[in-house]
Length: 122
Image 1 (cartoon, rainbow, N blue to C red):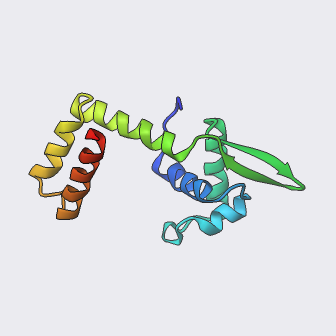
Image 2 (cartoon, one colour):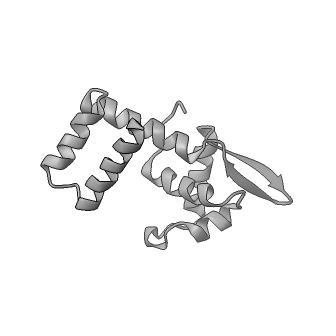
């Protein structure tokens, strides 16, 4: 994915990753209501995502059905890599150390990391 997507565009992508294809109205109805977006706002965001080639649409009568072209897992991988590259010199250990130093890891987080490391070693 060449162009980054904004937080607002990401909210639309989450809807389409959960269920697709959807009309613009379907997407507007599924976006978090706390955002207070109109259907026109959602249509604008869909247009931006189309321009960035992360979604596609096809005619269905007088409306369009939208679907993602980028898998959620691929997007998360790319964003995670960018974050680690930008803030931690491409190394994961400093990120985990940063979270640990700030008491941002719960006992469950630590247990999950330990289990993940055990699985990776196996």
